[in-house]
Length: 300
Image 1 (cartoon, one colour):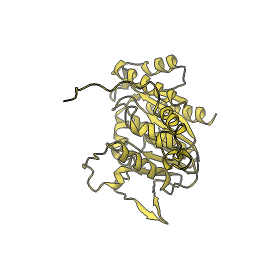
Image 2 (cartoon, rainbow, N blue to C red; image 1 turned 45 degrees about the vertical axis):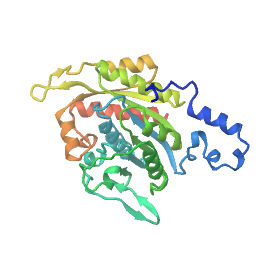
Image 3 (cartoon, one colour; image 1 turned 30 degrees about the vertical axis):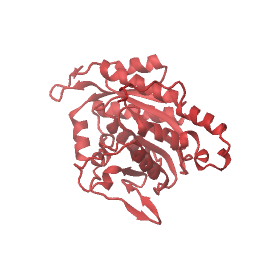
């Protein structure tokens, strides 16, 4: 019986190994795999988009989907044509947070029609393909890659200024696939909470993006303190300043901090993005400032 051993850490990337193997192969010029590009991947998706923004977090539960929804809505409110792609396939919450979870996808002219939230904002999510929202998606990597390729190439997105991609926690298949297949990837936004257990994983996400040769657009610190709903005093529930520290260590922009607020939680449950509430609450001002900073960094 073979011994159980841990896989060795590769000394070369999959892309480098593939290129080396193809260059020494006599049939490379006629091989379909060789034409697919690095590591046998399909070519970049043929879509009309100016900027693809990946929204990443090192761990779950830090508010990444909340940031994705509010960012996409803020961009569309600035007159940009925006697509929001929910790639958290095992926990697709974007439709719930936008109040469109009852919609189903339809075909039009052999293309998948996204769900149109407004005239400027369209959404695709696995949640639209599941009959029962409690049904789990039990897929390995190749099936995820095939689905991502479909969402990029077989959806009638139309011309987009931005495609905001909400990714699952970590640095696995979904993040790697979108980075390799999507055209015009502008970079990634890293979402973290202030405490050390979250910022440790945020650093991994930032280094992952750097290894792919992409820029980190910036770091957002979510759940940065809590505003007491009774007295308005700020309580450092999870601490404060961890996101700024990560940004400074990695020499990337710090886009701002968003406190915990019960109204933010209600907005997600009610399917109404917090950014559209337009109020004078400190939390709304924080969210608006973060989104404005992010748009400024991306467009400059």
